Every structure is written in structure tokens, then in C-alpha cells.
Length: 458
Ligand code: ASP
Ligand code: MG
Image (cartoon, rainbow, N blue to C red):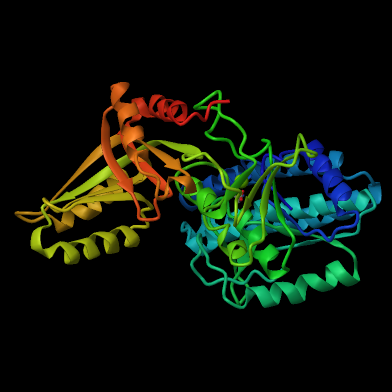
């Protein structure tokens, strides 16, 4: 079971999660994975960067004091025994002391490496796991708090986006099985963070707690992974965009993965990889409605008459265009993607037209300028680089689209009828996904038009 940042945002919420764990751990072996309290990861990141440039010792004291306040208040509410309370507070004190020292260290050095950034950001999860674990203990459930590294999540050294090493599965099993089977304990593992072989802390990328959960589930051959959220499950579209979106009971790994890549905040895009191989289902459950079954993400979904199953919308992206690549197309493309990889630009989607050898690359809005400037170096008399800012990406996903003629026709006629201009189109050979770009201000309208066209409205 994984609990995200909003589910553990304060003491009452943590106690609520502990009660859910208690309820479902009767008769089951449960491993819990937990995120930092909502907003904490972001504030740790911004404190880290402040410390490397302008922070005073006073600022650091204040920052740590605020973090203490929030976490101690949580302990007060979530842990129902004075003795357990004072033990967890001692553990947190050590962590706060360590955090203050690290931040001071960064401010003395005036420099923040990726490695120290991961170390600092890890405090978010490292502070919550002991609180949730203590809360469980105080409810009479045996529990132990572990860091990702303790639990066996050993990674390479690509700080900020670390990859688990092939041996993790074996290691996780040897670390966690005795706790589950002999001690009958509920391990509470920090999501998102791992450790290199020589013991320095790494992170798996933003939103990485889902990934932690599925890695552990795969290692232990779990029956299911439950990702607890604040909604009943996956919807045909984010109700923020389409108010009459409806609940989806079952969705395939492939479909869920496509949706996550295209901005639907379902789960970390890599998270399904460890469980797909073994066919372990992932269930999205609602902390506020725990008896509802939720959406199951699994291998074989029942035949569905829905051609388009769900839609996602990324409201703010941009396009970088490389035109006139001519006969050196392959060489230039290799260079383009090498540069984007070097600049760590996340490529959302690509479309290529063969005649003019024009390549359009959709990236996050925040990366447009970086990508554009970096790619300028390949310009010569023939090859040109340009950019379009402020586009929205709509993505229609559904396994039923594969081999069904006329889907693209319906999508684009519906847009045409509503006078929505399409800037760029992409469909890969899997045919599970048709994506297109429109002007930012047309995004919501476009997604509503398609939702309606395919009868997805509740
Ligand atoms: N706390 C981390 C983040 O905010 C990891 C997670 O929430 O999954 O990205
Ligand atoms: Mg989070």
C-alpha cells in the first residue's frame, strides 16, 4: 500500500491511514510505502537551492523550525501513546539536527550538487515513515520504519533520477520477508528514495513513491499493489477539465501508462514496469471511501466497447521545430536527441513529416527555451530551428483504437466542426494513442469535444 503526500498531509490524516492499514492488514501481509507530507518535497528543494546562494544561518533555523512544527504537530495527533510519542520525537530530533547541519554545510560551500540535493530532499519521506509507523504501533499493529535503502532499494548514481540495480528484487526479499513472515510486522518504507551501493541517498524522480511500491510488490510477488489517493479511481478525463467525466473500473497497463506519460496524474510513468512482467494488478483506492473497489490496472481487461477509453490534457507545453534536415536526416536527428538528452529535456511527443524533413518535438513549457537555445547550434544554411510556445496536448487513449478504422477521422472531424485548429498530430504504431497539439486556450474545449464525440460523458 502506498500513501501519497496529500493522504499524509497532517496528523489526523496519518492516523486515518494507520487505521486503514490496521483494518486491511488483518489476515494480510502488508508493506506500506509513504511519501513526504504534501508540499514538503518542494519546500526542501527550494530551501536547498536558497542555501547554496543566499541563505543565512537565521533562515536555516527558521526553515527547520517550521518543518519541526508541522511534523511534531502530526506526531501529537497521529500517535496515541505517550511512550511511543516520545520515542518517535527522539528519532525526529536526530533527523532535524542532521537536516540543519546539511543545510548549513551547503550554505558554507555555496554549492549544491545533485547528490546533496537528493540527500536533502530525502528528509521529507524520512520524517514521515517513523510517524506513520509509530501511529501503527500505538494502534497495536507491530511496525518498523525503513528507508528505501534499508528495504533493499539500491540504485545507480544518477542522482535525481536514479535507477534500481538488477539485484534489488533479491535484496528486497531478503530484507522484508523476515519482517513480514517471522515478525508479523508491517514495514513502513520511505517512498521515492533509494541508496547507492556505498550508502549515499538517491531519489527515483518526482512522484517516485509509486515506483518504490511497485518495485517492492514485484520483489515480494505481492497479490496486488494499492495506491491510495483522494479519488475513487481513474476517470475518463480529469473532472477539472470535463465535469461529466466518469469512473473507469478497469484499465490495462498499456493504457494507464500512455495516460501517465501524457500528463494524467495517475501514477509515476515508470511505476508499472516492475509489476507488468508478473501481471500484478495495481489498484487505485480512495482514502476517503476505502470500501469502494477502485480502478484496477491489470494485464487483460475485459472486452470493452469503448474505442477511446480516456483522455488526458497537458495544458502548457511548447514545440521546437527542426526543419530542412534534408539528406542528412538520420545524422541530424541523432544530434537533436543527443542534445536534448544532454540538456535533460523531457520529450513528450514527436512528429515528423517526410517531405521537408521537418521534425516537431513537444516539450514541457519550462523546457521550451532551453531546448530551443541548445538546438540552435545545429542550424546551418538549410536546417532551421524554430519554436511555438503555448500549446496544449490532448491525448486519446484506448486499446480498442488499435485496428478500428475511422477513429482519427472522428477525432479530427469533431475538432473541425468545433473550429478547433490542430497544430500537430502524432500516433504511434501501437495505435493505443492518438495525440495532438492545439493552442493552449483551445485545450479544454478540445478535450470536451472528443469526450463527447466518443460517448464518454457520465
Ligand atoms: N515526495 C516525492 C515528490 O513529491 C515523491 C512522491 O510524492 O511520490 O515527488
Ligand atoms: Mg508527493
